[in-house]
Length: 361
Ligand SMILES: Nc1ncnc2c1ncn2[C@@H]1O[C@H](COP(=O)(O)OP(=O)(O)OP(=O)(O)O)[C@@H](O)[C@H]1O
Ligand SMILES: [Mg+2]
Image (cartoon, rainbow, N blue to C red):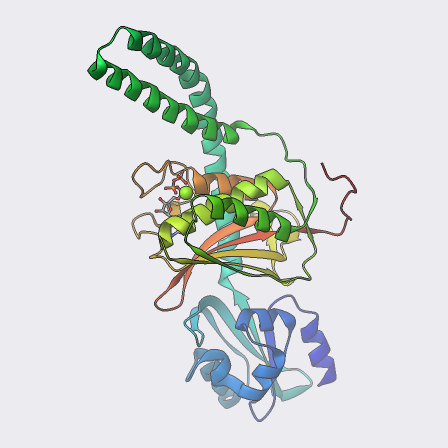
């Protein structure tokens, strides 16, 4: 079966080779990622370790054996041990030269959904650009007038009146800050990308978070030290992870726990905007918190501007994250995993093989 095994290894879709005695023999790299298990573990522990007991996949393999041909199930939900779920098409086919041997290939839905979502995110980012440009022009200028007038009034007021003018100034400042944040959207110039070390970016973000909004929260890092450099704009990426960490901190609350992980996933390719050549987004950063997750009524809208469940929240954090990640040609998505459950924000970014400049800035 050497030929089939080599063929599998070269495939970008997750695929496993099944021996005539129905043991799982060879899994390609994409399948190891998809099943979250190493080739060795799969070969040793077999079907139920990979897919849980009485899985759909095992059933399909049994059917293919019974009927002596190939068979498939489309858009099924696979429940993996440990509570993880994935949607995929599962295709079982006999190996041409040796029909007792089968291949099982998975066409993952998440890639299809990821592409859809990227299109939605770009749309959300674009609509935010228009709103932001309008706000910046129409609101910011009159604001300084209101602020100045309130300060002038203050001098002629009693203590009670001064409290009110102070309130006006404070609220005007709050609006001005909001508009400043919105202005990040109006910049539609392409980002200047340079080779950056993602772990340095994350380390910086972590320090900033610990000084401020994440005080008292435990932040655990699990990094893949061999990661290549990312093609990124450092300041913009800092904003991305600050926003994700801030949301995680707000969700988990005091004494909570946040995990930041990085990994290299060479199998994942995404077609930008659903069109053109597929680009590889192998660098994965996950920000995970043990909070209650996104409220159900916000659903898929959290990446749109002004969507917020928080008192005083502007709903701009994730919209900005989506815009910046899209500007990097990357992808961000939300997932709820496990039981009792964790909230995962996954950012996928392209890598670069260029070396870092001596004087990066
Ligand atoms: N880690 C998370 N856990 C639970 N819910 C989240 C998480 N991240 C985001 N959300 C939900 O998504 C909404 C939108 O997030 P976003 O960061 O865009 O805005 P915000 O945090 O409400 O306000 P801002 O970031 O502008 O202060 C949040 O109000 C919250 O309901
Ligand atoms: Mg936020």
